[in-house]
Image 1 (cartoon, rainbow, N blue to C red):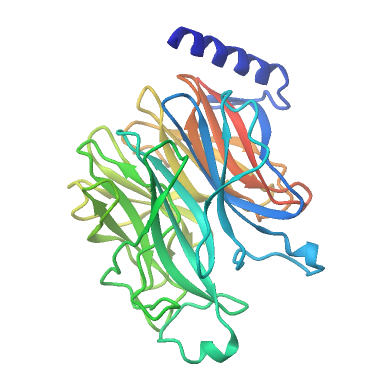
Image 2: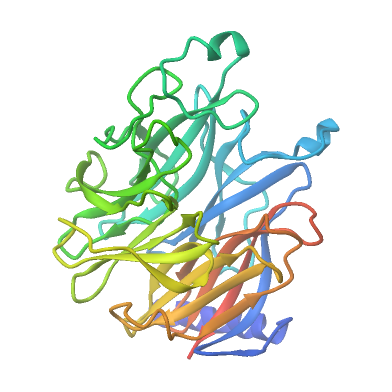
Amino acid sequence: MVKKVLMVSCAILFALSSFSSDTGKNPGAKKLKDLIIYEDAQFYSSFPSVIKNEDGEIIVAFRRAPDRKIFQEKGTSHVDPNSYLVYVRSRDNGLSWSPEPELLYAHPVGGSQDPCLLKLKDGTILCTSYGWAFVREEGLANLKQPVFQNREGSVFLGGYVLRSTDNGNSWDGPFYPPHIPPEVKYSALGNPLPAYNRGALWEGKDGRIFWVVAAGNDPSALRRTANYLLISEDKGLTWEYSCPVAEDDKAAFNETSVYETPKGDLVAFLRTAYLEDQACIARSTDGGKSFGPWEKMGFQGHPLQALRLPDDRVFLVYGYRHEPYGIRARILNAECTDYETAEEIIIRTDGGSGDIGYPWAVMLDEKHVLVTYYFNIENGTRHIAGSVLEIE
């Protein structure tokens, strides 16, 4: 059976390479194919994550909301009362995808954002997300302060976690992570804000799950967030606050992914604000009890996600929201120490605007990676796309 699956996989990847639109060389990788995973002109589809189940099925989850242009509005923002978490599947290693998404979760009192998937060693799937409530003007003045208000009456609800034990066919939850001590904000419901973030979680060698969350620790600057570490010892059912990851009086840190190296270091790949889109990094050498000072990585890009390759190198992928807009990556050594010198891999340069990115990668087999992301061509429909790369 294993041999048959591998033969099918190789055949599919040969087909992809035969129809590749870009076979240019990159340091450590060769792109075989760009593909569309999901696109519908009625919807603004964005912020994907991807996992692969034991049977080879690939699941891509993303946030889908109406494209407000269908209502003759000027544009679509990243918050919407009808923003739901949905997902599509591929059972042929990414060659084709289910045409209609399945509903993963619809928040009962608001719109949801950025489903972040993690497949655990025991087969459990975690999905973290967060939401926005849309409050009328008469209610805004009565909310317990401080709250974070984005636009059009949208007030932050904070984060939550969903779990599946049947390969994504059904989901339990939501389970609410704790309000962490540095956070000063309240939710739209008047409760201390549950922890939240967009970014990849990681299951450590000892079974603990690491999650870097964001929090506003300054009531006079609610938009400036810092990063903190949560740890779960029961497969994501409950979480404990551990320590700060990255804080600063001027720079902000938010959509962060975490990775555990073979040596046991925890590496946080930080999205920043007020640093000209510089990617940053912070490291823990004591199992998540503390982190050393954050550092610039020497390049622009965000957010970032790290994938372990079969030889223990790290495929680090990120969006590039400067001309030429696109998707980029680097291959780091096993301990993620050569980030300043690792050569940049150019995956796409044909984005229609800076409203793209949020890439997330998964292994297709021992030599091939699927990178998923949201994209637009000529500033058109926001859709979920992917690229297949052969790793050298």
